[in-house]
Image (cartoon, rainbow, N blue to C red):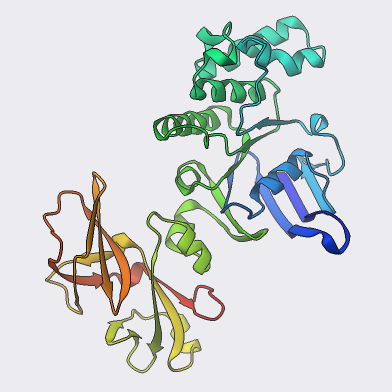
Length: 362
């Protein structure tokens, strides 16, 4: 598979000298032709900084950026063949939608016939044909963001960059535009890099996700792999709503069990156990949907319902073991009530175990 964007040993810091703050250090990232790459992480993790470096909006301190085998490290944004969609729409309020879409093309003296064809194609693709003669103030938030996307589309960009484009929209509009962006990627087959802190956007849109923390990519993989096999404790806790349940304990190698407090849970046969010393401190991670309430299973743990959160199709049940709170995801039609007794079972085959010191997955 051909690489479309290559980030090589990239470093960036705000300020200079001893007072400078390192945001990205020696970062490497390859993005392939036609891939939808999502940069995901909390505020301040460096994801938007990385996107702006790729766009040429920030001058890097070290490293290189290549787009389609062209070293663009020191090229101006206009010479990088990118299309960028911002969080704030960045539309010209005094211009109509049609003028907003054509602005960049008119500035490069593109023939009028070509401009008209590009606007026609983009507006049909985004279903904004009826809005071409309106001004931004006459549009809803979702319509404005469609126009902003259309302005990027008409540039025939090699790479499309999205900087949290849906964060200003309400939940229903976000869901609608997620669908539109996914469909757009399918229809165009273009390379797209998308920045968000919203894990639902990341999981639903991405071919691969780069989970970032403190300027470092913690894991780069498919959404399914990141959800089911997180590399470390940070990724495991950041992905999922609610997040993974964590239990501090030790591994009893002789009996092949995980022990926390007075609870012992039988482990499956994992290769890593042979590499551990007796009573190694670990953290067991279990997703809410991987805890079942089934009285027919052996090795049950007894607890009770402490809180119920109805979520429509699902219901979250909160309980605790050894004073450690945790959540269970069950069907929305449950008849459980507060203080009802629970017999629960952990699906160890779908769980994760992390080294307590390094926080890495074992």
